[in-house]
Length: 599
Image (cartoon, one colour):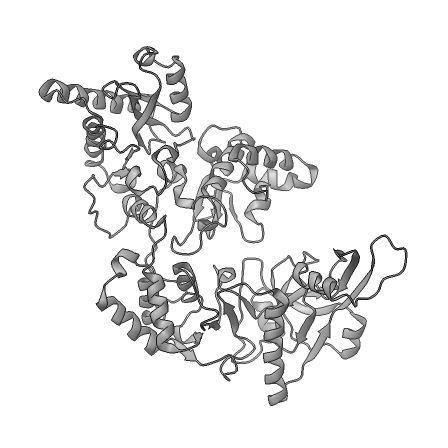
C-alpha cells in the first residue's frame, strides 16, 4: 500500500472505528459545526492524543464501506481535519479514498453519503465493475449485477426478470427449513428483522445442539451466572430470580445467557482485551473441560488478524494450529467479561459470562462488508427482506452462488426479491444521476436534456428547492446570483467559499454590482465547481467568459431571463470540458427551477 502511494503515510481504518478516530459524537441531531467542536474538545484529551497524532500526520486515509457515512459526517470530518492540520484546503489537504456500494445500506441517520456537496467539489468517482468476492463464479456475478440495476430499468422488463429467475433457480441453494442437513453449525444464519440477541443465539444453539447429539459430536454448554440484589441494599448479591431483570440483561448485555462450545466453534469478542478487540473473530480449537467452564477459567482461543477476516471455512475440516499461525491468527485467552451492572424495577444485577458471543445468527444489515463461507437467509411470510438494499447484501456475501442458501419457498422468494429490486426510494434518482454524471469510467449513456456536465438539482433533489445544500468548502467556484426582487437583475462572480461570499453580497459588502439594497437579497441560481486546482486567475477567466456570453445573448436577442443566463454557464463548462478528459472535467450545478420562478 505504501509503495503504491509513493511513500505517503496511509491509514486503513480496520481496527480503528471512524467515529473513534475523529472523536465524533454519538448524539443525534447535532449540527456539523457543533459535532466538530465536540470532537475537537475530545481529541485534545490526553487519552485521545494518539488519534490526534494520526489525523495530523496521515497523508492518505482509506475508508471502507463509506456509504454508511452520512453527508453530515463528511462535512464534520472536513471541519475537523482543517482545524487539526491547520489548513484551509478540503479535508486539511489529506487524500481521502472511499469504497462504497451505493445500492447497499446508507447511514442510519442523516442524508446519504453522495448528497454531500464535497462529492461534487472534491471527489473523483471510479466504478469498480467486477466482483472480487465472486470472481470465480460468473453466474453469481450476473445475479449481483442485476440486483444493482436501476429500478426504473428493471420495472416491466420481462427479459431481465426471466433471466434473474433462471439464474436464481439454477445456482442459488433453496431449502424448506433450518433443520435441513446442509445448514451445518458453520453456516451463518441471516434474518431480515432484528431479533433479541439471546433469542437468535438460543435458536442457533438449539439447532447446533440437536445436530451434535445426532452425530455424536462432543460439545459443552456454558450457562451464564446471573446475580441480583435490591437497589440500595447492602446485602450480598444472590442468584438472579427476577425475570424482568434477566430479560433486561438479555436485552442490554452483549454476552448471551448460553454459549455452546465445540471444536471449530467461532465467536465474536464483546470487549477489548489483551491481544484482541471488540467484534474480532475468534475460533476454538480445543474443547475446554467441564471443570474449566465451572470455574469460569480463561479459555484458549485464536483471534483473527486485525486486517479483517469475517469467516473461516471449516466444511473441509477444522484448521490446525499451524494453519492458523501461518495466516496470522494469534492465540489469546478470553476471560469473563468485565462486570457491568443492569437495573430494572428496583433490582440491580450483573452477569458472569465469557467476553464473547456466538457467531451464527444476525440480521442481513449487520453482514454488510463481510465475506462469508456459507450463509442461510430466512425467507417466510413472517420474516423476509423488505427493501432492495437487503437483497443486494444477502446475495453478495459468499464467493459462490451455491453457498448462499434461501430458507423458504423457491418461486415465492424469487418473485418477492425481484419486486423489491424494482422499488425506488426518494434518493434513487439523485444517486443514479450523480453516479452517471461524475463517474469517470461509467458506461451509462446520458439521456438528460442538459449537458453531461450539468446536474439539475431541482429535478433530482427529493425535497424543497430551498433545502438544496450549498457547498461549504474552499475549493473555488464561479457562480450566478439572481435578485429575488427582480429576476432580470443578475451577477456573475468567483470565490473560494460560495456560502461566505453569498452572505457578503446580501449584506452589501461584496461587490459594487450587488450593493444596491433595492435588489437585495440574492440567491444562487447556479455555480461551476470542481475547481480545486484552479488559481484565482483561472476562475476569473471562467467568470469573464460567462459574463461575455450573457452580454452577447442580451445584445443579439434581448434575452435576460434566468434560464438563458444558466445556459451560458453550461456553455462555459461545455467549452472547457470539450478539450479535456473526463477526470479533469468541471461541473455545472443548477440550483433553481427557472421555469417555476418565471425564467
